[in-house]
Image 1: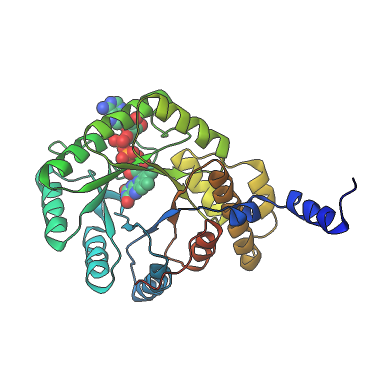
Image 2: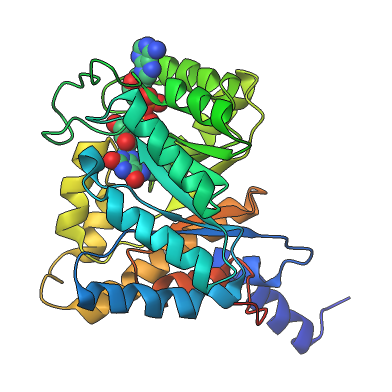
Length: 312
Ligand code: FAD
C-alpha cells in the first residue's frame, strides 16, 4: 500500500527535525532550571542584572546562584545581591563561597551571615589562586584547604543545601580519576548537588557522568550551559578552566568579530543544540550561566520546555 501524500509529507517533516524541534515535541518534560548571576560592579551593571532577574524570575528556577569574586573580592557585593534577591523576589538564592585568602574564622563568619540573612543554599568552592587560574594554589595557613573541607564546615554550621563544582573534562590542576575521588569526598562531606564547568563536548560530558555514577556518586549532576557570544573571550577562559573548544565552534564564529548580532544568534543555536541533545539523553536539569543577560537564557529555557508561570 502506498502512503498518502500527506503521510509522506509529514514523515519527511518528522525525519528532518533537528534536536531542538524534537525536544519541543517530546511529552512529559519536567525540566529543572537554575541561573547563575555575578555581583554587579557599577550602577549600570546593577541595572542590567535586575532587568535580567525580572525577566527570568517568572520562569520559576529551582534556584539562582550568585558568584563570589576571586579571592573573596566581591564578598560585600555578593552578599548585597543575595540579600536583595531574598528581600525583593521569591527566588531562592544560592550564594557562592570560596576558601581563598581567608581564615576559617572569616569564612565561618560569612556562612553565619548568610544563614542570618535567610540563605539556605551555598555553592562551596575552593576558588582559584589569587594570581589567577594557572598559578599554584596555596591554602591560607588557617583556612579551609579545599572545597571538601568547606562543604563539611558549611554542613556543620547549618542545615544548608550545598552545591559543589565538577569538571567533565577534568580540572586543570588534576586528572579525571582524582577529580572523581574528590567529587566523591565532597559528597561524603555533605554536598547535595554538583554543577558542571561549561563544556561543548557532549560525549565527554556523558562519559564523565558514566564515571561519576560508576564511582557510586548519586547526587544530581547539573550541566553548566554557557551561551557564548564573545568567542575570543571564551577561548581564553576555556584554556584557563580546561574546557576544550571544538573546531566546529571556532568555524561558526570565524569572521564575526565585528558582528555581535550574528554572534548572539549563533550563541543561542549552539547552546540550544547542547540542551536538546542532553534532553534527548534523558537529562532535564540545566544551570545557565546568564552573564547577567536575560535574552539568550530566556530563549534556552523555552527550548528545554520551561514557560512562564507568572511567579516572581
Ligand atoms: P576542589 O573540589 O577543592 O578541587 C580543586 C583541585 O584540587 C582539583 O584538581 C582536585 O582534584 C584537587 N583536590 C581537591 N582536594 C584534594 C585532595 N584532598 N587531595 C588532592 N587533590 C585534591 N571560582 C570563584 O572564585 N568564584 C566562584 O563563584 C566560582 N564559581 C564556580 C561555579 C562552578 C559551577 C564551577 C564549576 C567553578 C566555579 N569557580 C568559582 C571556579 C573554582 O573555584 C575553580 O575551578 C577552582 O580551581 C576549583 O574549585 P573546586 O571547588 O572545584 O575545588
